[in-house]
Structures are given as C-alpha cells and as structure tokens.
Image (tube, rainbow, N blue to C red; front, side, top):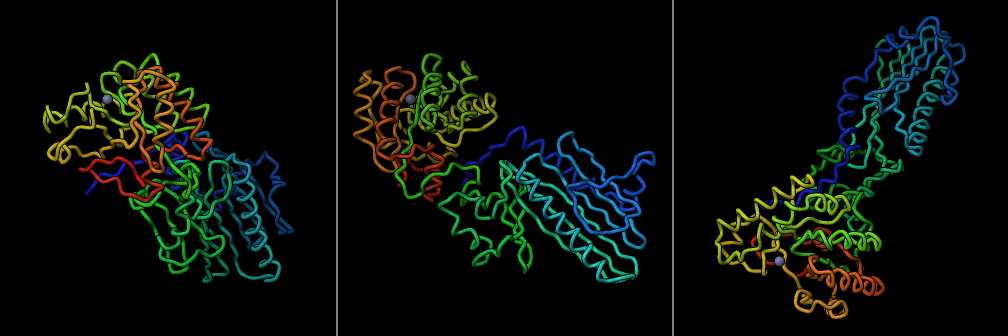
Length: 438
Ligand code: ZN
C-alpha cells in the first residue's frame, strides 16, 4: 500500500472548533423543562426580536444566550403555553451568512410548529424540541439540527438536517467541497446520479457524510484524498496549462526570504526540496515556506549521492531530514528529490517516498546569470513540466522570478508538485522517477 501525501491544512481555529464540536455534541441537550426553570425569576422573560413565531398567549418565554469554550454562542428559546412546550437551541457562528441561514431555518421550524398548533385546536400535550450539534474540519463548519415533535401521547416525528458552511459562512453543496475539475464526479462517489436540491451533508475530520433518502453515505477522508483535495484547494483551471517550479538545496539565509517575497507578490506556489543541514540552520525559513502554502520536499541531509552510500544510509538521510522539517514547521515533506537525481532500484524500493526529478533544467548553478536562467526556463517550459532551480544563488532567484512573469503572461498556472499530481489525476506512486506530470 502506497503512503499517500496527507493534506493537513489544519489551523489553530479548526483545532479549536474541533474541540468545541466534541463538547457541543455532548453538552447541548438541555432538558426542555430544565430550560424553562433556568430563567432567573427576577429577569423579565423577553422574546428575541430575531425569532418569529405566532404562538399567541405565551405563559413563559425566554431566550438564553450562553457560550461554549468562549467561542460559539448558543441561543436557547423556550416557551410553555398550557399543554404546549417548545425548546429550541441554535448556534451563532459569527459568520454573517451562516447565521442568517441558521436563523431562517429555525424560524421556519417554529412557524411550522405554530401553524400546526393553531390548526389543531385544543388537544393533548404537544412538544417541539430542536437541538443541534456542530462539527468542523479545516475551513468547514457543519451544523446538524435534530428536531423531535410529540403530538399527544404516542405520535412522534423526527427530522434531522445538516448544513455545511465554508470559511466565509456561505452554505455549500457537497460538490463545492471538491476542486472544480472533479465536481461532476462527486454524486457518483456517493452512489447517486445527482443530489436533490439542498441535500444535507456533514464534514468531520474523518469523513464527508451525505444524507440521502436511502440512508447516509459516508466517504472516509483517505478515500476522498485519493480523489481530490478539499474545498480550500486553489481554484485552478483544470484544463489550463500547469507548471511546477521547484527550488533545491536551500533554505538559504541570503536568498530564500527574497524568493518567498517574490513568489507571494505574484501569487505563485512552488515546491522546496530542502537539505537537512540548512533546515537545521534556518528553521524559521522552513516555517515560512510552509505557512505561505508552498509544498515541502526533502533533498537529503547533506547531499550525498544515494547510489554511492547505498539504500540503508539513503533512508537515514531522508528520515533525518523529514524529522527536521517536521520539527521546524509541523508538517512532513511529501516528496523526495535525490541529490543529482541519482538513485538505483534498491534505493528506490527502500525510500518510501514519491521521487521527483525534473523535465526542465536551466543549469542555473552553472550559468549564474539572470538572463540565461530566465531564458532557459522560458524556452524549456511545457504543460506538466517540473522545473529545477536552486534557491541558493541570487541569480537563480532573480532569473526564475523573471521567467515566472513571462510564463504567467503566457497563461501558465504555477502549481506545487502535489497540485500537479492532483489536478492531472495521477497517482504519485513510489519507486519510480517522476520527471513531469501530464
Ligand atoms: Zn541539490
């Protein structure tokens, strides 16, 4: 079984949200009667103007606001009117669009319950309970509403819906979790031809679950990662030209910072094949590379020729460097570039990594000249190319940035090596040399 590059775009916020979701799942079932009783007697119960509802003679109504983990505000509405009881809980996420959507749903459910009561006349005990739980992963927040109604002694109705929101609070469709080029395939992944309008689905750290009429269908994260990145992936044109620029032998205190500035200015992501010794000298640069979204690569500890040192020592070189990179930025590199592009079958089998070589070599280490480096890169560029540059030479930094400007004009999309595999739907298998991905 090949080890897949794991995408771990975990932010502080998403970790906090995750803890929160656990907490909420368990804590949030406030007893209906408990809610009513919790209203302090000195405080005049007042309706929340945001919550509609036509229940006329309310004997007791209260809106409580509480918070969990100091982050997510929870609103609780409870009412009691003769034989009618209502307890509604809903979250306030702080994302305007999501909160409007949640409130609209809550109001719709209350109105629907009120309509029933008004039409039913005096009857037995009636109760509405609307509860929720929240799960979050990466930039997604899913709110699941569990609604139960009791009419009389025996009639019970339950409704569960789930809505998922993106980082900006926009409500998403299941297709929108996946990168553009893969969206047509999404219903098929869940075993249907298409999703019904407004289908409920949930994102957790482990899986994406779509609630279909025939039952819930979950796709585990590993299965999803095989097919596509999540919603937070960059919106690239899957049919457009792509090129991956890679930088070897750094990070370099003199040049890598300047290169990162230049890439950022241009909105370009690259892949950095770093040498362990430099990683240990400049861990802050490694952290910056990771934080700015570039792809991490491993270029051995001190640049030996793998064919000379043999499989066992090559594995040691790579493992030591991966550990240093992980210590510096919290992420393990996904790819290895063997020094001098040199391996043999024994080394390839021993290294459990995808081995990335190159299809464009401007020989920047030899020509230390900005114009030559630029020209060589531009002349060699092709769709699916992997370009080799060294960010330890200032001429390579300037030359490659100049080449990027020209190639951007020509319509190239600069992608990381990881993105290149992903968008080209190619499995980055081990034990072979990858020169380009078409
Ligand atoms: Zn090198």
